[in-house]
Image 1: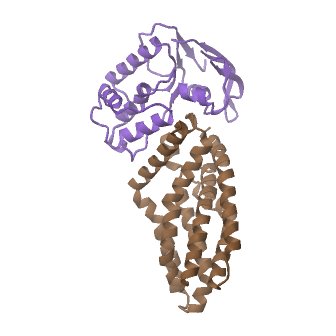
Image 2: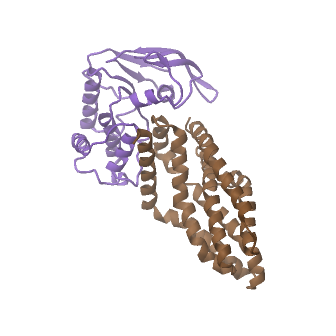
Amino acid sequence: MLEISDLAVARGNRALLEGFTLRLAPGDLALITGPNGAGKTSLLRVVAGLSQPAAGVVRWQARALLPGDPEYSQTRIYLGHQAGLQADLSVMENLRFLIELQNSEFRCEELAVCLGDLGLAGAEHVAVRALSAGQRRRVALARLQLTQASLWLLDEPLTNLDADGQALIAAWLGAHLRAGGIAMIASHAPLASSAPGRCVQVELGT
Amino acid sequence: MSSTAQAMLALARRDLKAALRRWGELGLPLMFFVIVVTLFPLGLAPERDLLGSIGPGVLWVAALLASLLALEGLFRSDMEDGSMEQLILSPQPLVLLALVKALTHWVLTGLPLVVLTPLVAQAFYLPANATWILMLALLLATPTLSLIGALAAALTASLRRGAGILGILVLPLALPLLVFGARATDLAVQGQSAAGPLYLLAALLALAMTLAPLAIAAALRISVD
């Protein structure tokens, strides 16, 4: 259960959000839309714990979040604009590191299957430098499948993805929500998911 | 093995691998060190007494400047590609990850400098026992320098042109290292015991190891916010 109550987010001296309240139960999806500069990324960064809110609290499982909370860190995954992949390292080296950092167990077979789903079969040892922007985004998204995070915080996950890639992410999202996960997604493109739970549309900047 | 230790090892392994694939960047500060040090005997009169007396000071200043050159890249690639966000968001204590990053940086930049020292010390007619003391002093001082430098690099990580500020931040803090390091080498050249300044360098290292990671972690959080 993710509870955001009376949250105020500011960037510099500019207030982006005030009195923002949202409750997400297992299986719920929050789709955050709004024009550029409305505060979609800033909101996700506050919920992820990268930035501090100007006011208000974010609660996870009825506990207020503190910076660097290890339990929360293990259950949520945040994917921002930048993929978090080192260009000089291979796909496998990058993912293995990110997964071990998350305290999850890394399994080679699992990675091979996941890369196959992503249309990157056999690309384990290719340097990330040699991949296209869409392929890099796919590698970054592989973390969603390879870690057991119950809260997904995704910032424009569909950027650079083709139609197949977008359909695949929608399918993953549906499975995640059916398994009782929670997702908060900022996106311009409509995300069609066959989710059983609630889909909350949050429009910022209006 | 605990999961934190495993993640720390994974970070060290990743940083070493990534740095070795960009080995040209690693060689740059070392080349700078060797060139600056050899410029002095060429520019000054090649007299044994003169070079012997300025040698320790020159070697220390050159080592300080060379390590400054390597600092800029310490957090840059992590900031640019978003890895820093993932490090901060990970369940591992950021203080320990910061310590691993600073020490890995020392292995890549400080340690080769120490290994190169006996070679360049020859240019100043440094006696063998003084060279050993110099290496020992550098071995104690360069990790401290990496930790202080990592703090400055973390503070300036979000600035586009942080390199200039780095020098202004690091060099004043590195003054004690220069003073005790050059003194230890000087004493050894004169054939006296260098134990005093060496102990002080070791004390500074212990201080930096315990306090700097806390400050680096706080600075990284601010830089990413």
